[in-house]
Image (tube, rainbow over all chains, first blue to last red; front, top):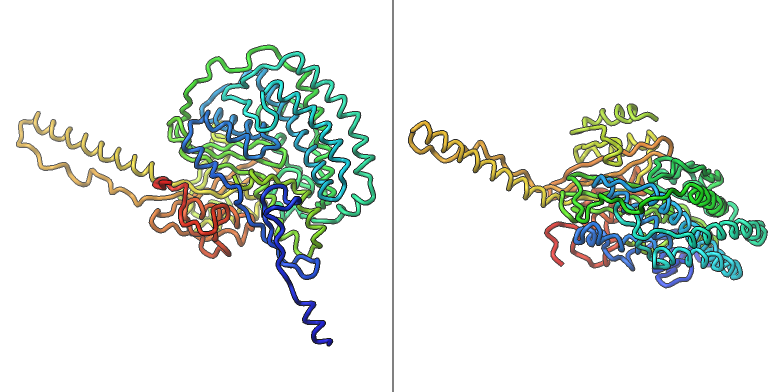
Amino acid sequence: MNHLASDQQKETFVLNMGPQHPATHGVLRVKLVLDGEYIVEADPVLGYIHRMQEKMGENRTWAQFMPNTGRLDYLSALSYNHGYACAVERAAGIEVPERAEFIRVMTVELNRISSHLLWFGAYLLDLGGFTPLLYAFDDREQILDLLESVTGSRLTYCYFRFGGVYNDIDDNFLTGVSAFVARLRSRLPMYHTLVTKNIILMKRLKDIGVVSADMCRRYGATGPVARGSGLNYDVRKNEPYSIYSRFNFDVPVYPEGDSMARYMVRMDEIEQSLRIIEQAIAGLPEGPVMAEKAPKIIKPAKGDYYQAVEAARGSFGVRLVSDGSNTAYRLKLRSPSFSNLSLFAEASQGMLVADAIAFMGSLDLVIPEIDR
Amino acid sequence: MGREQVKTALAGLAPVHLVETDYGKKGFHLDVQVAPDQVVAAAEALLREQFFIEAVTGVDWLGEQAEKAKEAAKKAADAAKKAADAAAAAGADPPAPAAPAEIPEPGPEEMEVVYDFNHYGECCRVVVRTRVPRDNPELPTISAIYPGANWHERETHDFFGIRFLGHPDLSPLLLPEDADFHPLLKDFKA
């Protein structure tokens, strides 16, 4: 009897989480080897929505690839537009007019807030709280309406062009954004009293999924994951692109490395994005939104170039190799969730399944961006 | 962590070439080319300097090699013509065919493996690259030093068929599990 009981304790079984699982937010499968409810080994299986975006980049002209960038991370599509536009502009030496830079920053930050709001709602859904999602979507809807009025789409934006943006913003948009900033400011304290200070949330997030700074380094984690582990790294500050160096904003950093720290980083980032938007509205200059001299057919000089931007989930990098023709010779898309997820296997060892869900949600994964 | 420090750390590996690039133009600070068997040492040196790994990827230079060969052939033909003209001008007999020494041996077709590193503190992007022959693309893995490289290398194997020796699992990551093709090769036809 004793012998049987001790044997049973060693018994492990395999559980497939996904590929269709609400907590994996898309078609991601995690093969879990479990000992009771504890994870012995976790193996994420990727590629269910792989579309070979990088090959498409080699077969389309530079401009034709722009819509693809909005379909990598569909929750912060404008950051990806921005990264790709900046990369090609750097390679081809295209200048962007002031006003367009301001519009880019404003819209990207709005998109960042909408992405964080969706994460907030969906994350709490993972943890079993339904109501916060409704509040978050209420606010997010305002952003989608605003962005729809200038970009023409609500999710997979293709708004930026090489040398500017394709549509100017008007006074309606500006008053709408100002009203939204005031509205979200007044609602954020409610988010915190309703959710952040909730004892159940704290118990589920504190000390769960601790990721050390060293682990971030070895896996290349960026964005809120790195900042939740005490690393003061934000591409907008460390490697300022566009006109981010002109804005006053702080980079929220929490040293604990647990899921709560990552949660707090994103909540604080919403406030910082609001600050940037306010400054962008105040400083918005008059002028064109497209560079007059921007060439129609783009042929960057031979060579390779790198451009990184801070997307909602971390550093999105474009490494492009040009052979001087109107298509890319090689287009590498470095996506943040890919690296952020790669540390899941190591960090989730010995965790309870329920905690692993809380941990994975705090990584804020977007699968199409991982699978590309 | 200074750029000079990185340069000295990497200089010990006898890189084929190490240049400080114009960041504004290129988007990275240091461009280092090493021999394929030096990538592990390079990764170790960069981890000591607390760099983090951004990505690993490949570039298939088939096109470039073809262009180079074409250029070389054109150059040789020009030289031959020039020599013939010169000879004709001198009134000598038509010369013997162009000296074969003029035509450079077309190098083995190569693929490049590119490693991007960056630093959480002072921004310093280091690009480490190495070239492997196209008909036998093999080089050691750095996944033991940077576990994050595991997936990047697997992806590179998916797309280019580059084999990372010592890698724990090179089964397809993004491609279907029975995939036997490498879509980013320049001679890949769907």
